[in-house]
Image 1: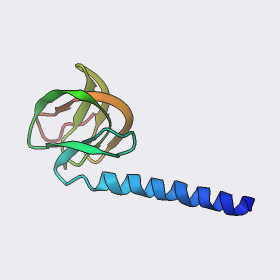
Image 2 (image 1 turned 30 degrees about the horizontal axis):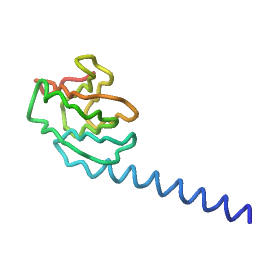
Image 3 (image 1 turned 180 degrees about the vertical axis):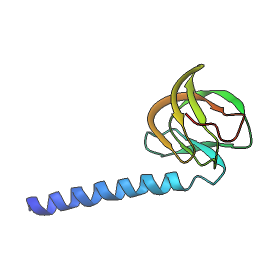
Length: 110
């Protein structure tokens, strides 16, 4: 019985990990996606990579992000203070932020 319970726990953990990864990969190319969940759950907003500068200040705290910009960096900020820098293709999780700042020039990196 203990082995069966242990097996169920492992399968459950793997399925949760798979769900998180597939949610992050659902973020479309050329966008930065913001999620209210710590590991890419509850996508609530996306920002086009063609934009630059401050995208806005939000009353909702976001906790994970995925940068699908091909060649542009984004900074996750809390009330003007950088908490995480995301190079193209990078992910950020377990961070609290309410602003996204997108680099003005392509080829900008952390």
